[in-house]
Length: 51
Image 1 (cartoon, one colour):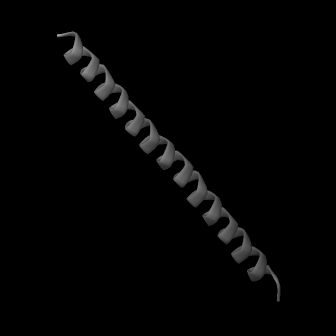
Image 2 (cartoon, rainbow, N blue to C red):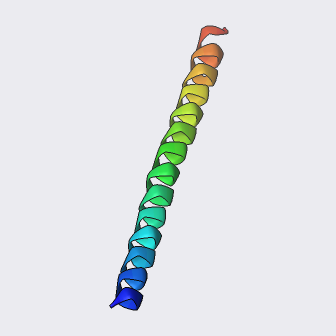
Image 3 (cartoon, rainbow, N blue to C red):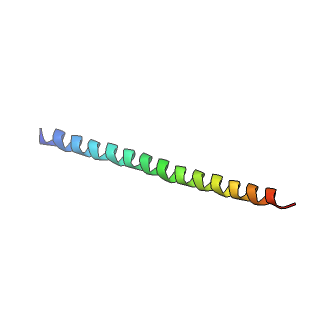
């Protein structure tokens, strides 16, 4: 019984770690893509202003 409880807690910790990494990846990836779009928009607007 104790072994089963230990295995369950280890499984829960592993699932929590995977979910944490997925959320972190989504946040970092979204921030990166947002920054890239902002930089591209800034370059496009600066080149459109010049004659």
